[in-house]
Length: 103
Image (cartoon, rainbow, N blue to C red; front, side, top):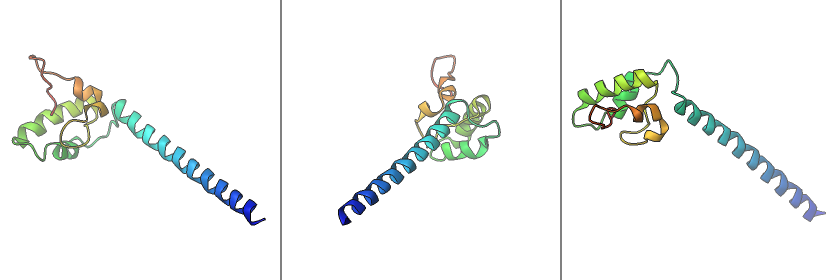
């Protein structure tokens, strides 16, 4: 009897963990898809670019370039460098020389 209640309790616990995992993965997929689709039209470009450019040696230039890219794409990749896959539009903007315009 005790063995069957343990099995039932373990099964219930595993089911709850699976349900929580599925809900969390859907939330992460939704947030990632929002970033890939261009994010929100009401994005705070100033705050996002200030965070992106906080370690730059030329923060004013970085913020200006980031701001123009953010206005076009409505997204800024997270972190202070890289992560371009989170915002493909931001990564695709280049200078005439073919270098990335967006920091």
